[in-house]
Image 1 (cartoon, rainbow, N blue to C red):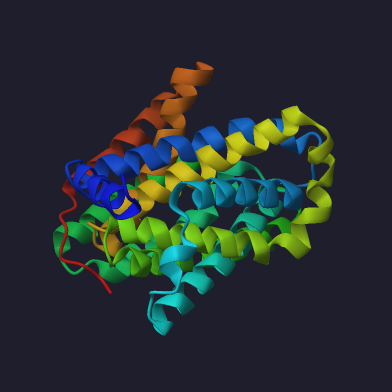
Image 2 (cartoon, rainbow, N blue to C red):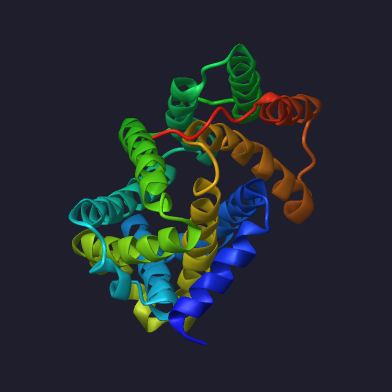
Length: 294
C-alpha cells in the first residue's frame, strides 16, 4: 500500500467517526500521560521530561508519516505556520512542566482554561451559545476550585502556558484546514521542529534517562499518551469543528479528569464535583455550532 493510498484510507475512516468522539479520546489520553510522567519527575528535571515527551512523539510521527515528504509541497505561508506551531509546541510543553513542578495541577489547568474561554467567547454569536459558555465556565470553576498557593514564578509559567495554548488552538486549526490527514502530516513536521527547538533547553536535563531503559520506556509512554494520540485526535476534530466549538469542548477536560480518577484511581467525587460535571456536560449539550472560524 502506497503512502497516498494509506492516507486516503485514513481520511475515509476518520470521516466516519463523529468529531466529538475524537475530542473525548484526546481528553482521556491527555490525563493518562501524567501517570507515566510521575516516574520521570522522580529522576528527571521538568525541562528534560518535556524534551523526552516531544522527542519520543516526534520519532513516532517520523516513522509513521514521514512528514518531510509533504513539507516541501506546502506554500510559504503554510510552511511558516508549521514552523510556528513547532516552536509553540516546544515552549508550551516546557512551560507546562515548569508550572506543574511549582503549582498544583488543578491550578495550572484552571489558568490554562482561561485561554479557551476567551476563544470560545470571541466565537459565540448567539444567546444560546453564550448561555452554554456561561454554564460550562461555572461548572469548571466549581470543579477546579483554584487555590492560591505555590511559588510566584509558577504563575508566570502557568500564564505563559495559557497564552501558548491559545496559539496552539489557532495554529492547529490553520494546519487542519486542509483536512484531517493533511493536518496530521503537518503536525508531524511541527513536532520534529519542536524537538529541535526544545533541544537547547531540554537535552541536558534529559540525559539521566538515557542510561535507564525504564525511564526511556516511560518517556515513550508520555510521548504517545500526551502528544501523539491527543494531538492527532485534536487535528481530526479541528478539521470538522469550528474553533469556538472546539474551545468550548475543552471545558470537558476537568470533568474527564474526574471520571478517570473514579475509574482508575477509585477517587469518588463529592456532591459538588458531580454537580460541576453536570453543569459542564449541560453547557456542551446546549451549544450549537455556528459555522467555522478563521
